Amino acid sequence: MYWNYEWPTCRTPGSSASGQVGTPNPAMASSGATFVAATPNPFSASSCTSGIGATCSDWTLIEFDDPFDPAWNLYWEGWDRRSTGAMCSEPSDPTSTVGMCASIHHPGVDEKRITFVPTPLSVSGISRGINTHWHAAWDTTPPILPNIVNPPSSLPPSVTEGGSSGSPLYSPQQRIVGVLSGGSSFCGATGSDLSDEYGQLAVAWEGRGTPATRMKDHLDPLNTGAEFIDGMGMTPFTLGLDPLQLAVCTSNSSTANVTVSVDADTGFTSPVTLSASDVPPGASATFAPGLVTPPGTSNLTLGALASVPAGGYNVKVNGVSGAESTFRLLSLNLSDTLPGTTSLLAPADGAIDVPTSLVLSWSAASTGPIDYQVEVATDPAFASVVLSRTVSNETTLSVTPPLTPQTTFYWRVRATNGCGDASWSQVRSFTTGVTFPEPYCAVTFPSGVEPISRVKFSGIDNRSPASPAGSQAHEDFLAVAGGTIEPGQAYEMLVEGNTAGNYTTRITAFFDWDRNGSFDSGETYSIGSIANSTGEDGKNATATITVPAVLTSGPVRMRVIKKYSSEAAACNSSGYGQAEDYLLGAPSDLIFANGFESIPD
Image (cartoon, rainbow, N blue to C red; front, side, top):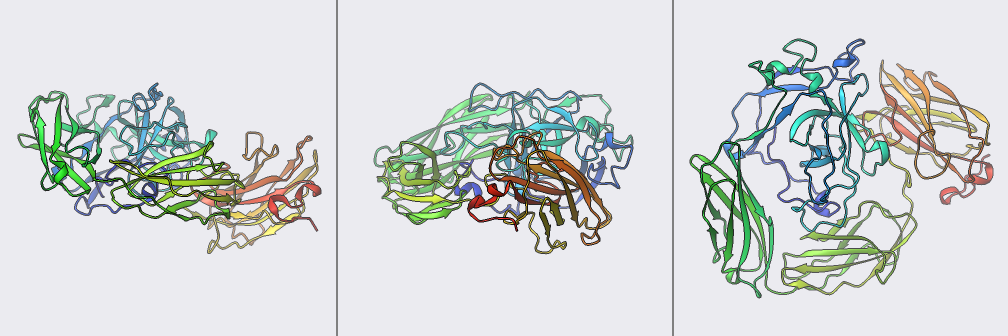
């Protein structure tokens, strides 16, 4: 178990740094633990058996064998076992998180991320779990936190991913109320898919009624009956820095100031002595006052900066009170002249069929450390800017959310540092193409692919490999001919697939009848289930689909999803299974659909 696995700063979402993966610090790691208690796994037929679905809240409690190093400055989270959903709410201040619920997780087992919930939690279930979970609907307009370095004007919705499972969900009082089992969220999700399900501590508290299957014996060993408790840190006080990052032009100023705040746990009132280490050679650091009784503040002045070479430095701000100590890092970037002009590298000027989620790259400007302002517009005068981001000391930017397909865009980059802005680079253009499954959401199965081996509908009779080897989670069969349909007519769908053993998978089909680029309510059909099939033994699921009597002209996207244990959402991002996309329509609708000819035989 690694501790403090996080990025040194709060990165700008969408920047190349945001997509980078750091390495955990092996000096902050624990090994060896003892199982304490667990409630049934809602996805397991052997664990969450018939009749016990109301206890399958997916909690596990372990106890580490060895004590933790105080230098790690860990925080012991509080908990809330009440069965009433937390009243999460969205603050009026777009830079605040007060009143919101949140999950802290490690998507893809990468560094920690935080995802916010602005509406009250509601009771839900998942798979075999019955009323065992909290339903968390993610914020569609995440807060622009003050400590984000060079924040954009808005952020796309944040979600969880594979690897986030088991992560905590916190109430507005910052107490854990649930742990992540799964859900329908994925990057780019909208509507009801922008949510996940968290096993309730309220359910796990009593569990299955024994010490090995419930949490109360271990979280309340004295049987006090407490319904909630607050968390506490390894040190009774904390330090805060405002700002966390300083950019100083030493040719204009030789000093810089930072506000240091000192806060403490309830009842701690001992004074804290402040100091600084790793100060750049030749510079000075003074605190006024140097002794703070929490809660309180001090002003840190960094002086003689004109004598320090340009570059990036990390200053360590320390706090000591008796045997207790902690620290925060201040990022200090010093410049002595304006940066140079950068050159655009990729994509090439005039490039076509560029992916909508592309990576922009440019040359490094002189005189670092440097921020880069990046703009993308739909016109060469940049009157209609669709993306404006600033990245620090990086020469690439991953564009998110995806740009509009089949559109010409113009882009430019400008370097900036503490001394000011350089001139804009030359302007380049590129034209986006269409990347499957655009404009529809993608489907993923992080647990593993269990293939669909046959889909038969209308004139389509498509067979594909039943073996998981080499199979994609989401397959593109848009070019398969035969999907002619007529309004008001009924057609049988037949689906076969590999269940990877004696398991049951469920088949769901989606039809974008109104051709609005998403699968809405009324466009979802349960096809049935397949059990214990190799995908080549003829076992199948069938259902009859009736085409709406009124159908807009143009090709209709059809999506078929096979998923272990439960029916999938159209934008599934959990579990085992596979998805396949096809095109349907009247014969005239299928000519040159999506840029290729698809005339039925």
